[in-house]
Length: 141
Image (cartoon, rainbow, N blue to C red):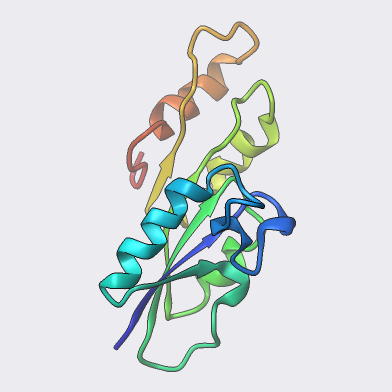
Protein backbone atom coordinates (compact mmCIF):
# COMPACT_ATOMS: atom_id res chain seq x y z
CA UNK A 1 0.00 0.00 0.00
CA UNK A 2 1.34 3.42 -0.94
CA UNK A 3 0.58 6.82 0.47
CA UNK A 4 0.67 10.01 -1.54
CA UNK A 5 0.20 13.53 -0.27
CA UNK A 6 -1.74 15.63 -2.73
CA UNK A 7 -2.09 19.39 -2.54
CA UNK A 8 -4.24 21.69 -4.56
CA UNK A 9 -2.83 25.16 -5.11
CA UNK A 10 -4.90 28.33 -5.02
CA UNK A 11 -4.48 28.90 -8.77
CA UNK A 12 -4.87 26.69 -11.85
CA UNK A 13 -1.59 28.09 -13.16
CA UNK A 14 0.20 26.17 -10.38
CA UNK A 15 -1.12 22.73 -11.33
CA UNK A 16 1.09 20.07 -13.01
CA UNK A 17 3.39 20.27 -9.96
CA UNK A 18 4.35 23.89 -10.79
CA UNK A 19 3.29 24.73 -7.20
CA UNK A 20 6.63 23.23 -6.11
CA UNK A 21 8.80 25.13 -8.64
CA UNK A 22 10.41 28.46 -7.77
CA UNK A 23 9.73 30.02 -11.17
CA UNK A 24 5.95 29.66 -10.64
CA UNK A 25 5.29 29.87 -6.89
CA UNK A 26 6.52 32.10 -4.09
CA UNK A 27 5.92 29.16 -1.72
CA UNK A 28 8.04 26.79 -3.79
CA UNK A 29 11.06 26.92 -1.49
CA UNK A 30 9.11 25.69 1.53
CA UNK A 31 6.90 23.33 -0.47
CA UNK A 32 9.89 21.93 -2.34
CA UNK A 33 11.52 20.98 0.96
CA UNK A 34 8.31 19.26 2.05
CA UNK A 35 8.04 17.44 -1.29
CA UNK A 36 11.68 16.29 -1.14
CA UNK A 37 11.53 15.27 2.53
CA UNK A 38 8.43 13.15 2.00
CA UNK A 39 9.78 11.83 -1.29
CA UNK A 40 12.92 10.55 0.45
CA UNK A 41 10.62 8.48 2.67
CA UNK A 42 8.66 7.06 -0.23
CA UNK A 43 5.68 9.42 0.06
CA UNK A 44 4.84 11.01 -3.26
CA UNK A 45 3.74 14.66 -3.17
CA UNK A 46 2.00 16.20 -6.16
CA UNK A 47 -0.63 18.73 -7.06
CA UNK A 48 -4.17 17.35 -7.10
CA UNK A 49 -4.42 17.20 -10.89
CA UNK A 50 -1.82 14.40 -10.73
CA UNK A 51 -3.93 12.23 -8.41
CA UNK A 52 -4.30 8.81 -10.00
CA UNK A 53 -7.53 6.86 -10.21
CA UNK A 54 -8.28 4.61 -7.23
CA UNK A 55 -6.37 1.32 -7.42
CA UNK A 56 -7.60 -0.37 -4.26
CA UNK A 57 -4.35 -0.11 -2.32
CA UNK A 58 -3.05 3.49 -2.26
CA UNK A 59 -4.23 6.17 0.16
CA UNK A 60 -4.08 9.84 -0.85
CA UNK A 61 -3.87 12.59 1.74
CA UNK A 62 -5.47 15.70 0.28
CA UNK A 63 -4.40 19.16 1.43
CA UNK A 64 -6.07 22.15 -0.15
CA UNK A 65 -4.38 25.53 0.05
CA UNK A 66 -6.98 28.24 -0.50
CA UNK A 67 -9.10 26.28 -2.97
CA UNK A 68 -12.43 24.63 -2.13
CA UNK A 69 -13.29 23.61 -5.69
CA UNK A 70 -13.07 19.81 -5.60
CA UNK A 71 -13.35 18.56 -2.04
CA UNK A 72 -16.95 17.32 -2.23
CA UNK A 73 -16.22 15.15 -5.26
CA UNK A 74 -13.06 13.78 -3.66
CA UNK A 75 -14.87 13.06 -0.39
CA UNK A 76 -16.69 10.23 -2.17
CA UNK A 77 -13.44 8.45 -3.04
CA UNK A 78 -12.48 5.70 -0.58
CA UNK A 79 -8.78 6.25 -1.30
CA UNK A 80 -8.81 9.97 -0.38
CA UNK A 81 -8.52 11.46 3.10
CA UNK A 82 -9.40 15.16 3.17
CA UNK A 83 -6.61 15.96 5.58
CA UNK A 84 -6.49 19.77 5.70
CA UNK A 85 -7.77 22.98 4.22
CA UNK A 86 -5.61 26.07 4.62
CA UNK A 87 -7.41 29.40 4.42
CA UNK A 88 -5.14 31.83 2.59
CA UNK A 89 -7.07 35.09 2.92
CA UNK A 90 -8.71 37.05 5.71
CA UNK A 91 -12.52 37.25 5.94
CA UNK A 92 -12.32 40.88 4.83
CA UNK A 93 -10.48 39.96 1.63
CA UNK A 94 -12.46 36.81 0.80
CA UNK A 95 -15.60 36.45 2.94
CA UNK A 96 -16.94 33.75 0.60
CA UNK A 97 -14.07 31.44 1.55
CA UNK A 98 -14.92 31.79 5.23
CA UNK A 99 -18.62 31.26 4.58
CA UNK A 100 -17.78 28.13 2.57
CA UNK A 101 -15.54 26.84 5.37
CA UNK A 102 -18.67 26.35 7.49
CA UNK A 103 -19.61 23.50 5.12
CA UNK A 104 -16.06 22.34 4.44
CA UNK A 105 -15.43 21.70 8.14
CA UNK A 106 -17.69 18.67 7.91
CA UNK A 107 -15.40 17.11 5.28
CA UNK A 108 -11.84 18.15 6.18
CA UNK A 109 -10.12 16.77 9.27
CA UNK A 110 -8.44 20.16 9.89
CA UNK A 111 -8.91 23.75 8.80
CA UNK A 112 -6.10 26.24 9.37
CA UNK A 113 -6.19 30.02 9.25
CA UNK A 114 -4.46 33.15 10.48
CA UNK A 115 -7.01 35.82 11.29
CA UNK A 116 -6.72 39.20 12.96
CA UNK A 117 -9.67 39.45 15.37
CA UNK A 118 -9.30 43.24 15.49
CA UNK A 119 -10.66 43.64 12.00
CA UNK A 120 -13.72 45.85 12.39
CA UNK A 121 -15.43 44.49 9.28
CA UNK A 122 -15.91 40.93 10.57
CA UNK A 123 -19.42 40.15 11.77
CA UNK A 124 -19.77 38.46 15.19
CA UNK A 125 -21.24 35.32 13.57
CA UNK A 126 -18.34 35.05 11.12
CA UNK A 127 -15.79 35.68 13.88
CA UNK A 128 -17.36 32.90 15.94
CA UNK A 129 -16.85 30.49 13.04
CA UNK A 130 -13.31 31.75 12.51
CA UNK A 131 -12.43 31.28 16.21
CA UNK A 132 -13.59 27.68 16.03
CA UNK A 133 -11.63 27.10 12.83
CA UNK A 134 -8.45 29.10 13.33
CA UNK A 135 -5.33 27.03 13.57
CA UNK A 136 -6.79 23.82 14.99
CA UNK A 137 -8.96 20.89 14.17
CA UNK A 138 -12.61 21.85 13.97
CA UNK A 139 -14.13 18.40 13.87
CA UNK A 140 -17.00 18.47 16.32
CA UNK A 141 -16.79 22.27 16.75
